[in-house]
Image 1 (cartoon, rainbow, N blue to C red):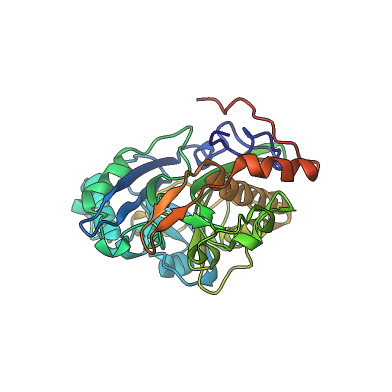
Image 2 (image 1 turned 45 degrees about the vertical axis):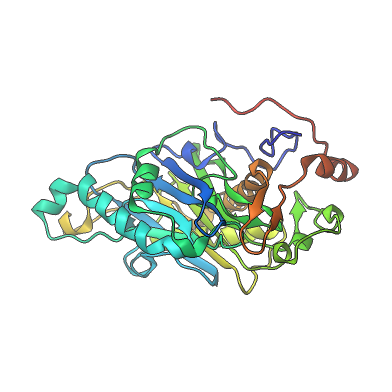
Length: 373
C-alpha cells in the first residue's frame, strides 16, 4: 500500500479539518523545509533537516505573536521560552531541527531576521530571539557530524509556503523515529465555531517518541500486533522527543495559549505515549490574532481582544484531535530508512498489516482521494 495520510487511507479521525488539514489552514502561516539526505565521510547516512514556520508569513515588519509554552517532559530544548513565559510573545520564525544543530539554526535564523526586518533593526535598538526546537535523530542520522549549515536554514525559510504540506521524511523530521517506526513531520487542523465565528486550530509535530508496544491508532492498540519478532532493540526504547507547534487565529491571551499548549500532551497520549523519561515533549501555541507593533514601539496603553475561557472546551478538543492526527499522519506518510547507529533498518508503519487490525475493530481502511492541491 502506498504512503498516504490517515484520512486518505480510509480512516475517520474525529473533528472537522480545514481545507488542507494542516497548520497552514491558519491564515498567514507558512511552512518550509530543507531536507538533507546523503552519506557522511564515516559511511553513516546523513538524514536530517530543518523545518521553518512563519506565523506572519513574509512580513517585512517584526510583529509580536502572542504565545504560550508547556513542557510535558523537559528532556529537550526550545529556545526563547523564558521570554514567552514572562513576556507572552515571540517575534519571527519557529524552526525545528535535530538536537546537535540548535546553535547553527538559531544563528542563521537570527541573521534571517536581521535581514528580513533590516529597516526596523537599523532604526531601533532591538534584539532577535528566534524560537528553535529539536528532537534527537542520532539513530538514523550521523548527528555528531553536524551537517546542518546556515544556508540550509535559509533555504527552509525561503521555501515556506501556504497550502498542502509534505509529511514524513521531510525537514527537521527527516531522521526521526516514532513508536519504533519511521516518524517525522506531520500536521493536521480543526475548525471550531464559537459564538457564530469560525476559527482554525492547526498543529505541526516533529514526532520522534514512543515505544512500539505503546502504539494506538484511533483507540485501537496495534503496537504489539505489528511486532514481527525481528525488531532492533534500538527501535523499542524511548530515547526521542516530540515537538508540537499549535497555531490558531482565535484571539487568546498568553495564559490562555499556555493552557492550549498543555492539551498537546493529551493529544500524544491518544497514540499511546505517557511522556517517557527520555523524551522531550515540548509544546508551543501561538495566535495570529491581535496583530500589532512590537511592544517596544507601541503606545503605553494596550488593548487585546480575547475569548472567554468558558468557551475554550472546543478549542482544547481541537488541539487534542489535531495533535493525535498529526502524529499519525507523520507515521502514515513516512518511508523506511537505514539506521546510522547501530546499522540496520527502521521500517515504516506497514499500512497493509495495519488495515485488518483496524477492520477487526470496526474501522475500515479503504483508500480515498487526496486532499485538494
